[in-house]
Amino acid sequence: MLRPRPMRPRGSHHFDKPPLSLDDLVDRLVGRGLTVPDRDRARRYLRHIGYYRLSPYSIPFQQGGPDHLLYEGTSFDDVLDLYVFDRALRLLVMDALERVEVAVRAALTDHMATSYDDPHWYVDASHFQHGGKHAGLMKIVRDTCGAALTGPPSPRASA
Image 1 (cartoon, helix red, strand yellow):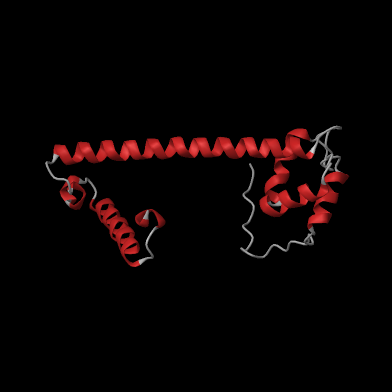
Image 2 (tube, rainbow, N blue to C red):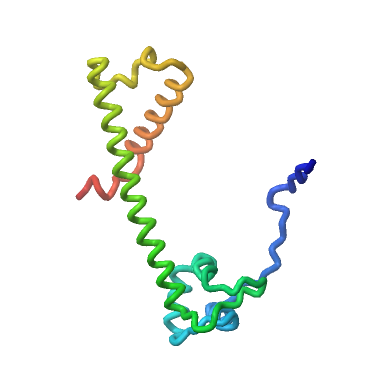
């Protein structure tokens, strides 16, 4: 039977990797076999995306050893194209999720409002099986409305 590892105190791990300049990071990629025809362009992308955000996209091109060597002929654009594809896919999925969220929320609100003949059905605790859940919902509503009323105007409100 495996024993669980004891938890280490938070914040006690020491990271001993030194920070690297953009040139050093490009050198690291080249040293792993990445073809980088335009170093200035690679530095620009690393500055805006970040090495630790971009480098995992090189994993499909790695030979599989602990040294992270890449297959011969792998170019910076191969890795960048995979990152761009993933970004586009993520945006499409987030857009679809937002549409589903809005539709479910609208369907719930319409159903509850017409079932109880009350557009403010959520304020009445008797519509909830658990009073604690109603209290939690009301806290969320109050906090959200309070933040919206006391915070700076949103860019959409002025458009």
